[in-house]
Length: 377
Image (cartoon, rainbow, N blue to C red; front, side):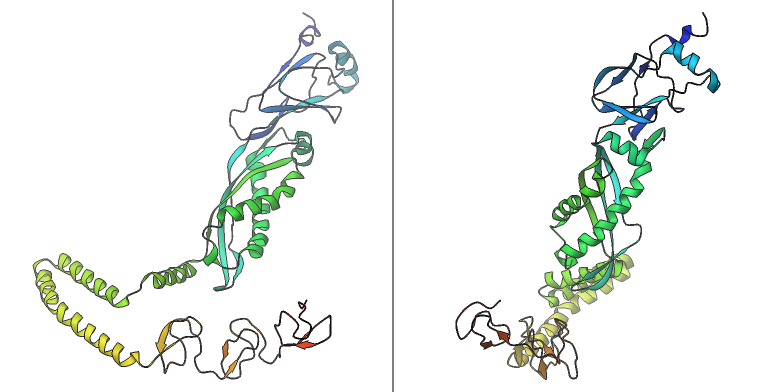
């Protein structure tokens, strides 16, 4: 057998992804090679093959068996390669592209992101989720991201995609959410909207963002405690019953932990509890009876509060009317320059609304003209 006999056999080119994480794999692995005339390329249903010849993408192949014709004839290759030290100047390579869905790719915020909450103020949030991608334009993906690398995996691109998702998430969350108290029930809506916003960022690389999910949005621990406290206050209607229940649970726990001595203490406390609770109830009833005629309704939260209270103990609304916001009617404290509710400058006076039809001046906030009845712009 001479030196050319081993080169006349047709080559069979195929690729299997054993790891399940490769997006693109180049054949041959070591770089461009002498893919002979008539080489057989086998492409699976979940793959696409892209032939690069003389540095250019010549064609993309779908599922099936294909015969490659690169004009890289075996004997001619050896003759032409003599001036180049035995290496063929007619180089070719095949990039096998994985077209399956790559699922469960995780994204999340490395550092908390700033979010201005309408009720809690400026807080920092962490968010996490998963997303799925698919290559829809193999040639564009290879030319824009893979380049000449022999292997390109999800690990090589996931860090970049995570940063893109977090950046878009920051802007989208600030535009669509006003408070964390309105977050429950909005995860699907936020996920779909964020996915649409990211479609262009992924599409420029030949990628399709098939699904994106937000699994958690968490504030700092101190903000979580504040939210929990507010939730408890909204659930607990009878604070007196809660105190009694807590006291009974504490005595029961003390009796269990102290043995016989604790049992005696628990028995003594148990005998004292009816009198204590009845006295407490009597004081509470007498206090309520005495104060029932001296209670008023808070104009802000509509709860009953003592008549002599300067501020509502539930919502903090100022009861003594010194001045009111001209924009929302909130009671203002002395020398206040801005409203604590809407931020309106207390020194600003509301502007009269001029009717564009008849020129009549109308009261601030009027919707229709008092003169001609037409709707104000």
